[in-house]
Structures are given as structure tokens and as C-alpha cells.
Length: 303
Image (cartoon, rainbow, N blue to C red; front, side, top):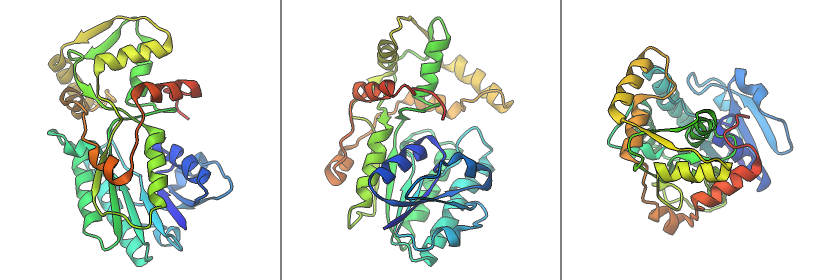
């Protein structure tokens, strides 16, 4: 069985390549021309050039493919039109080409933030893409992972680690009680590998997150503990930070989108019981994930 993976050069994509190859999968990855040099050649891995937005190269990429894992996505900071072009039009092109190539199964990696009360361009594009997947004739599965962390993470927990390393105090937006449920990246990739081996998929969406819910303050304390640091937290009032971030973001001077702050305030708690019952999903605790991440020596470091 041969698998096509989109988005192989991103944080999750790099981990997923390792997981699938270790499981003996025959893997083909789709990359844009400017990203081809980011993939290391190895046995069982084939690299093809293509473009989801234009559809160029998809016919060749999908030849003899049994399962598609669609991980590629455009996130903030980017214009709404670019996000839509990549995440909606790109998904439409991939589904259409998969149908013509008689691909048997299509796994779409969405995001748990589509369940949020605050939807930005990224979340709306993912919801549109989900509907495209559902309306296709191909057997599908949709995964909605929550906040993902692990070795090589430069966003999310990775940004928090850099802040802890950089500042004499830990800047915490809000009162620190916001709930989060971080998902260790290897738990996500292991589940995807196991799903590829199942004979039948349930044709529905599943929310994925870590085993435990923790507050933002607890997350900072655990990170400091693993880093061997003792630092005090400074709680910054949410709305002044939000308005300043919104202003700087419009000027192109902020990497964090205002919608991300709203999600932080709302919290990332998820109900993963369906994934546990139906898919056998068994995520690790945050402490277990941090232990593995820090043991790797690549916490919060771009690769």
C-alpha cells in the first residue's frame, strides 16, 4: 500500500514521515519546488513536485496511491485569500485528482480550533475543506488535533519555551487559568500510522488532544521544572495585550494573530472520548510528553 503525504516539511509532517517509514509504509511526499531540498532522501521515501493551489503535478503524484494523508495547510500570518487558496482550493484540487486516480482513502488533518467560538480565516478555511472531504465519494477520516507539541516545535509550546529562556520573568497573557490540553506529536503520528493499517474507516471527524487538561500557569511551571529554571510569572491583562497585538498584526509586526489570543483565553479543552472508544487513541500525559521531548534534546528548535 502506497501513501501520499502533503505537508511533509512542517513540524508534524517531519515526525509523520519518520513514523510511517518506521512502520514499513511506502511513502510518497508532495512538495513545492522551493521546498524539495528540505526532504532528506531515504529508503521507502519518494519525493514528487507539485502545487495544491494550481493543481499542477497532482496527477503524477497520485499515480498508484492507495491512501492520501492531507496535512498541508496555510496558517497565520498570511492573508485571508492565501489561506483560502491553499486550504480550500488546494483541498478541492487534491480531492478531485484523488477521485480521478481512484484513491481508496483520504485522511484530512484539520484542527480542533474549528470548534471554537472564535473563527478566523484559518478555522473557516478548515471547515470549508472538511465539507469538501465529506461530500466526496472517497472513504475519508477527519482528525482535529488540539495544540501540538514535541521535538522541533517552534510554535505553541515551543514559543513558550523560548519566552521562558529569554525573559527574566515569564510573561503570561491573562490570569493563567486558561485550560489547555496539549497533544504530543508522536501520539498523533502513531495514531495516523495505525489508522492506515485499518481495513475500514468510519467516515467522520474525531477531536484529538492530550490525556490531561492543565492551566496555562501549570504549563509554565512544568516547563520550568523540566528546564531546571525557577522563574516568576507576570500576568499581563488580556485585553490591552489583545488590542496591541491586533494593531501590530495589521502592520505586519506581530507573529501571533489576535485570533490566537482569543483561543488562548477561551481555552483548548477537548472531548476525546470518541477517539478513545472508536480509534483506540491512547495519548500520553503532558509530563510524559515533556519527558520525551526534553530527552530528545530538540525542544523548541527548528529543524
